Length: 209
Image (tube, rainbow, N blue to C red; front, side):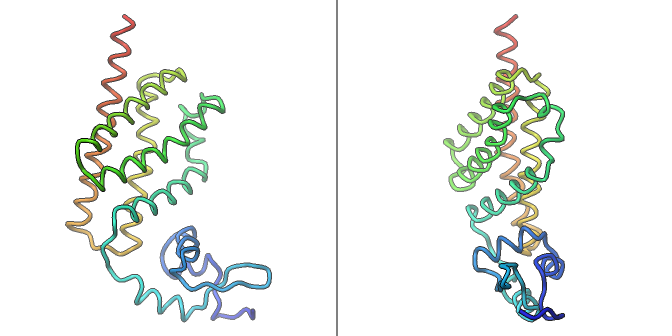
């Protein structure tokens, strides 16, 4: 495949579209964005195709909750893999088994949010409170303080929130009612988790006085 101004690398296509390279890779893998391969199996993008796709395929549109959450999960995996998690003081205190448990807790949080967005009922609230109990119990099991257990949850909550916002930005959903509803639901769900976490920590403390 000849190299010219017409052909873009993954990074150049991402810069042209104004998104992270991992997003372009995801769109390509899903067949949403036209991609070509060199003989060495490297991704290349035709500038004219990218520009046309940007004008047509990325028009403002509604997103199904499941789609938003799945895109958010991909972004969360990337951020966690970038070393943000390893930099957390509470995480550095953990052994390998505990670290694995916390890394998996990010997926549990995302799946719980997906269920909440889909049902928004009592079962979803019960699941939120169950997740909060698990964060408190896990923190106690691995000798984290109550504050550190809360910090662990807030780390994943904040990454989830950032990922959800990024998905809305990248799909060009106009700010307004859709953003407000999304933020309200994410906070409503994660608030229940935090309350349950704090109540469980308090119960543990009362039981050992």
